[in-house]
Length: 168
Image (cartoon, rainbow, N blue to C red; front, top):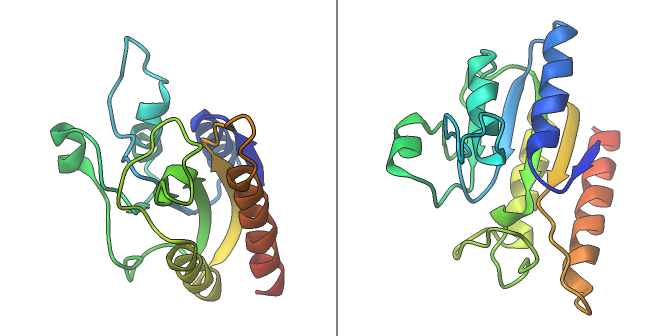
């Protein structure tokens, strides 16, 4: 389990799994696809992370995407369920912007129309029931001074997800 300010944490974890020879799929929860080839002259910008995941030949399923560029839309790997041929072992990357800003305003890139708490956990429960989660990260919390609910939500997300995985 990794915590990150921005999604670069995901790339580090996936690179290690690649070196270990793990056959995994990456399930990416986010408001945006992060499939830019480069941004601001930075090939490792957080908006490029999932492009690198694809470049490493990991199967990718993106959930909750509702923003991004036209170029990214053509590359997106979104779905209403994991593909039937998706690997049995998965790594989950959860950008908190996947949640609706009404419950998660404390993120760098809030995007209207995100998941409710219950919708996110329905996805997570289904994935944990079907697959072996070998790791996960939670990223993009941008705390707001004197607003503690988003911080608590992230802590609860991590705690509940660890519980789901441990009971699987």
